[in-house]
Length: 64
Image 1: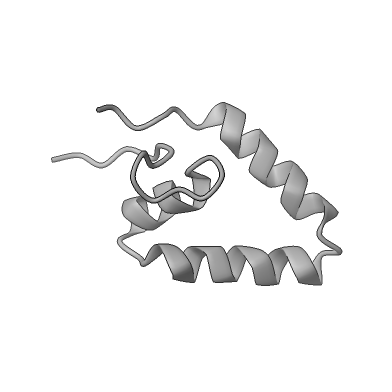
Image 2: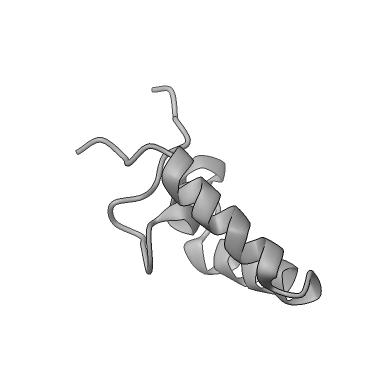
């Protein structure tokens, strides 16, 4: 079965972006969120927020 990068319906806190990356790469959702938070903190947070919002609108929602 081919995996597609899509926002998660099950593992989501805001929009499912980090959960979608976790499912796609086979990682745990907390690990993706932790890396995202660290990257956002070390980049002064603003770029991380913009990237998340862009991914929220560009990534399709996972099919039911």
